[in-house]
Amino acid sequence: MATLTEVSVVARKVIKFGIVIVVVLSIAPGIVGLMESAYTKAHPPPPPPPTVKYGRLPVLDFPTSSAATPSYTLQTIEGGLPKMPNEAKVYPVGINESRLLTLDRVQQKLSGMGFTDQPIQVNDQSYLFIQNKIGSKLVYNVVSGGFSYSYDWTNDTQVTSSHNIPVGADAISQAKDYLNSVGSLSEDLVSGNAKLTYLIISGSALIPTDSVYDANIVRVDLFRADKDQMPIVTVGGDTSPIEVMISGLTDEKKVVQANFQYSQVLDNDYATYPIITPQQAWTDLTKGRAYVAKRTVDNVIIRKVSLAYFESNDPQKFLQPVYLFEGDGGFMAYVQAVDPKDVGTAQ
Image 1: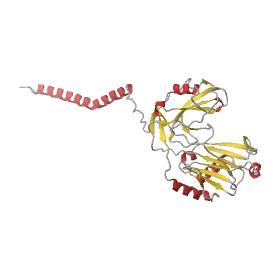
Image 2: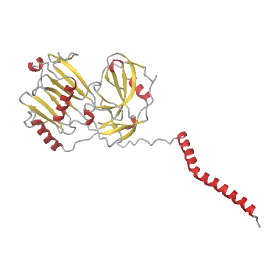
Image 3: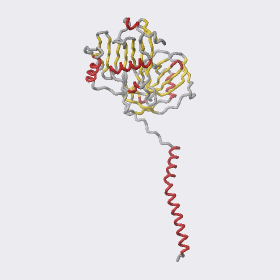
């Protein structure tokens, strides 16, 4: 029979080992978690594959050019081509189905601007409105919501002799008010950048000037705000398919030209698509398979390579990513970024 001393020794050992077991069991999950975290960090799981849920995308509608391919030199801050992700987002563009209701609403708005006659149907999407008092014209697309307004100011001495044009923020505000009076101005245009170009009328030509006092017209180009921290680039590079030209007059001749070609991007819906590497995009550029939006020199030094979204002058079905090459002299060129295996349907 065990003595009290032996029982006491055994009890102390049991308590000691019990405490050790309890401590081990309490810290074990933390140790396992740290081990799993270290393993995951050293062996990260592969990212989910691109969704590609819209199928094959349209080839981007770049204008054609017969200009010779310039020579390119790469001199970026990175010392070469930057690292880029393997995929990018593609957004669908909304299409207006209620064309009849849209036409009625547009007629109501334009009647207050002097377009009181019934519009002339140009095709299944577009209608021509004529303002008989001054002979101005506006073509409205009831599907895209885009429009083009023009007034022949070339022989109007009131316009050609006036220099009282709005400047700076006032010109931008007037341009936005006009566009909003015809259609609607979305938040990405309200918060986006604007460019002002002051113009002197010379016959039927418009000559840029730095002097606002000599200018007869100010052109206001509105650009969308960045999307996904990427700029939205245009066919003109530093011009926009959303622009208003304002004279120095205050009546119905105040706006002499306006264009609003805008794709309503569906922000709540997108797909991811694989994109080509920067090396592939660079090859396309140097082989003449890029769209050059702006070029002022023959030997181009590329200073920056990045991703952007492309805004066409014409209605488009998707907002797609492009590689943006920027260089000296304001040079800008685009290469369609989505992998060619996922591109190829008609726009």
